[in-house]
Length: 489
Image (cartoon, rainbow, N blue to C red; front, side, top):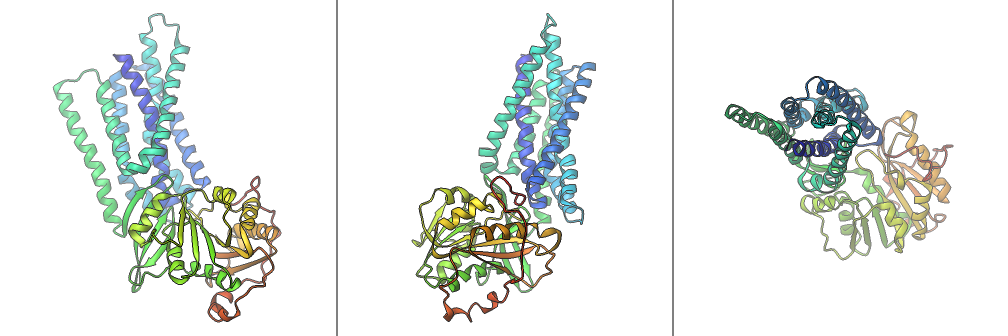
């Protein structure tokens, strides 16, 4: 029975450790983002915590290989896991609002919020090896025992990774999942404890009530501190917030993914709140015969909805990888999926470019996830695929978040050079009159052919946008390719 309990404990703790790692990325994403740098930080901190747990767990197990002591450690793991929702509001949020770097925030919060339970879960394996070694009468199978425990823990990690990534997070959400991890750890601690007296059982009931209370308190203070968040949900790809934002006399409803707003609309007029989206209308000026549009990146579908209302004679296809986004767009932003001039493809944008046989007059790329750009849509190969899908006089219009000068200008400099290598004519627009060193919305347009199909009758309509063109921009950066991509997430 003891071996059976240990095998279950090792397997589940391995699984729960990986669940916590994925949960960490979701919890932190609205505050620090989910770029490669942030992911690297989270993984590094978690591995560091686990390494310390393996080392210290081994030392303690050698001195006191006691199941009751291991039960106490696992119960502590349940306690620190239950604190995650509380620490999100009391530590992660206020720290992210300071002027320190996001990497520093990710290091500190990963270490204190997720590192401690990961450290505790890592102690289970060396305890299990020691306990099984003592039960081995021949005392000559330490290698076999160690290998079996390591394998079982790794299999648990694999199961936890796939279960959390594909099922638990998208269907349950991180908050429910944190509660489940807390309860499972509590049950494991109870299961392996050897001396279950009435007094112990009564104490464990009180502890369970405390754990549930802590979890509920975490939800309570989150809602109290974030009254502007209407919806807090998880999809296969992201943690998504729907927020209410009040600016002067205007109230916006916004969709936030990571640290950036994907879309927002005026709740009263239902007009788009993002100024840069109106620059997509320039296709109507530069190509008077444009009828068909492809948009990569739907989010809340504010531009497609606007487009369908404004251009009654045109069609638009939208590629959005995240079906949850589309559901939220219908529920919260008024998307009408029954419109026959709208087609939605739930797949990766680059994959769609590579495989589709459709042809378009305009391709709009708005696939930022928060403030991170998907590098696979920024490369020479991707833009060449997009160009090949264009009809004559077609164009690719891309929203880019970058500075125009200084340390934050890398993105536009690389991408401008790449556009110049693919398209015969390229134009660049600064959406708002901002400091050129600040990160901001920039619109980059690549034309399939020389510009020769302008609708001069609409020049006055688009004068304000056309006057925002940056005509003196240049770049000597290396072209971005699938094998060389210094930009993106």
